[in-house]
Length: 310
Image (cartoon, rainbow, N blue to C red):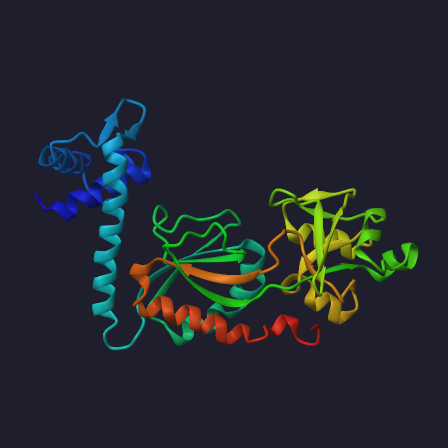
């Protein structure tokens, strides 16, 4: 029995939820995949999978084995890639998860330049706002916006750029309702809320050592920042959004930032950033390093979207 091949078959069955789909993705016969998994269980003298006509699920021992097997297979892949990249030419498949709006606005426009410069790297980009699991989803890099309280100590973190927020509204809205001079006045304004985390309706501000929390409300709650930006541009209310989303609108005069003498953030942790996270076994991956370095260089420090704003 080829144990590595059996481990790959087992992992693929778990990830796809069945032997048939695993066989299709592995381009093998279903009987071959079944035989490999059975042989693995026989070698371990342990049942790894619960099989039924409708589903395949992990046993308690299967859970333990799966977690270790995934890491081992990733390590093997990484060793192979390191050899392939020994000529200092990044190559191979690079799988990246990134936020939808940020990815569309600031990563998608530079992908052609990256691929022209590094044609041996094949990109698989997953645009999703939900948190991604690097191990289970076989990802090389996760780009995450926020603080890192829940990132886990076993990940390597590189900060790509700062993440600065402003409260802003359209000139027409402020002409009708006036400008707020202090965060406490926001309770009287129509605040358009981004519902992505608990406590989304409490906006926090800091000036020097003073922190102000304001309970806000308004006519619209949405989990899409682009929608909130558009409604704000249409003159319906105020938004608290990052400069990478509304910086160009402020520079063009379509939106006006207020309360700019305060540090703005919706959560209690004011230390925010845009980060690239990857597993320790990707530490020596040239394609991972190359992609992150490319993003950092193109974003700049401070990032280009904050030019003339701060």
